[in-house]
Amino acid sequence: MKIFQRNSPFSNIVMSILLTLSCMIILTTPPQVSAKTLTQSPDHDLSYFESAMVTLGKPALESKNHSSSSGQKKSLVPSFNTDCSVWSRACSEEILKIAKKPENVKWVKSIRRRIHENPELAFEEHETSRVIRRELDELDIRYRFPLAKTGIRAMVGTGKSPFVAIRADMDALPIQEAVEWDNKSKNAGKMHACGHDAHVAMLLGAARILKAREHYLKGTVALLFQPAEEAGNGAKRMIREGALEDVEAIFAVHISHLLPTAVIGSRSGPLLAGCGFFKAVITSEWGVGGNLHQSGNPILAASAAVISLQGIVSRESNPLDSQVVSVTFLNSGDDHDAIPKGVEFGGTLRAFANTSFHHLLKRIEEVIVSQAKVYKCSATVDFFENADTIYPPMVNDEQMYEHVKRATVDLVGPTNFRVVQPVMGAEDFSFYSEVIPAAFFYIGIKNETLGSVHSPHSPHFMIDEDALPIGAATHAAIAERYLHERDISINGLPDISINGFNQD
Ligand SMILES: *[C@@H]1O[C@H](CO)[C@@H](O)[C@H](O)[C@H]1NC(C)=O
Ligand SMILES: *[C@@H]1O[C@H](CO)[C@@H](O)[C@H](O)[C@H]1NC(C)=O
Ligand SMILES: *[C@@H]1O[C@H](CO)[C@@H](O)[C@H](O)[C@H]1NC(C)=O
Ligand SMILES: *[C@@H]1O[C@H](CO)[C@@H](O)[C@H](O)[C@H]1NC(C)=O
Ligand SMILES: [Zn+2]
Ligand SMILES: [Zn+2]
Image 1 (cartoon, rainbow, N blue to C red):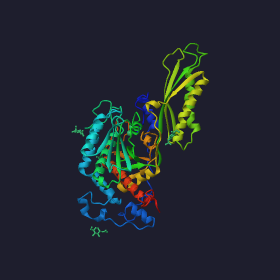
Image 2 (tube, rainbow, N blue to C red):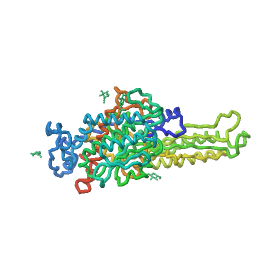
Image 3 (tube, rainbow, N blue to C red):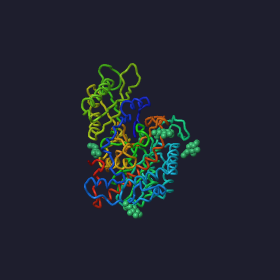
Image 4 (cartoon, rainbow, N blue to C red):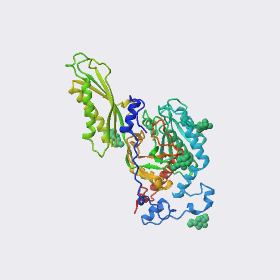
């Protein structure tokens, strides 16, 4: 999650203003999904497909003897007893059981702590990447390395199509950790303050579950460990270096301090804003200082431009399509006697719709250049395109979102899934979503007893680690089930896009 840009010219003071004004992750208390929407089929032992087919008036599939209520015998042998050639809730339950095995819980938490202690910034995730590869080796999982310098593409399954991807980001932030605890960051001035340590742990957790269930996988799961989400657009480079080869859909999770521990949240459509930064330089066409009356005045020009920029959003945008342009710094030197030769100012822009985002870029430049002209000045505007500071909006594909919801509700129950509102943060996961259908979702880490209530990018940020096994299980269920339903749809069984929970 991107809240501010590491290599942007903004000070911490500006950052806190940004957090308050525009970039804060605001998950307004999400509405509970209506009971009707999420009502399970009357017989809880019916699988999703069975219930869908009952709804469609077709005969249910033969019972496979996989019900969890079929006795104590099952729970003594937690996995591999279920025939998951037809997906059922029992398959979700088995995934959850593997995730919740005490040794797996301990393992996933210790990976997160190991990575938390040694945070590494964008494209410097060498040790993090090494820890991941060592675990993949232990699990006997093949991978390609390096992609995008420190990135990894691991693969579990048949090695053949279809391919579905799950992604975790690996980088930390240039923040000094203020939380005193056993596994506090050992790297001065660096911290996993956005939970990417947890993302890595959950993806490795999923790798372990999927490996244990590899014989059920009807295709291949690509596990993408990506560098440089916070700065540098690691996703873009991963794509360039083949991360999405053969992949037809992709999913990723981000921790959320606004959802209670292990609660999953998402929404269809726009989820996170597109985000960009700009810097304008306005210079007098008449040269430096000198005659106060005859030369162009960059101070006046900049002032007029700043006022006009505020007008772009208030006058030109549809209020239902949230947009932000904030000027966050202005610098004209400190000479008391002369008009400066130039003024620099800049700020940030956000928008949810792709078209409005690109429109904003164009208008910001137009407004600044034309206001400068009025005051006999000239202007240049830089959007740092080459420095990779532009992120497109993150828009969830509707079908992929429905898949996340279905898999999650089946796994953790309807009360642990929430529909959330879009937020003004940004994520470079949006680059994947420009290439293939994608869905991004949140997992809660909020626990008031523990004090894990701080927003990402805060030096006080911390997580409730009890979310980790659930996150791992959610990833695994989403991926395994995607391949499953994809396979069934290829083979002419019911169309997987029919959402059984939504049928009357
Ligand atoms: C469940 O399995 C047992 C033993 O394999 C079999 O005898 C029984 O008929 C099965 N029940 C159903 C409902 O298929
Ligand atoms: C966390 O800190 C404790 C106490 O210092 C230490 O024993 C443990 O090895 C650390 N855990 C990890 C995974 O680094
Ligand atoms: C967003 O708009 C830009 C510019 O018009 C275009 O290049 C890009 O492909 C669009 N992205 C999506 C997801 O439509
Ligand atoms: C919060 O954390 C405490 C301490 O670990 C734990 O006892 C409690 O169950 C957690 N609460 C929730 C809602 O997860
Ligand atoms: Zn972040
Ligand atoms: Zn993040």
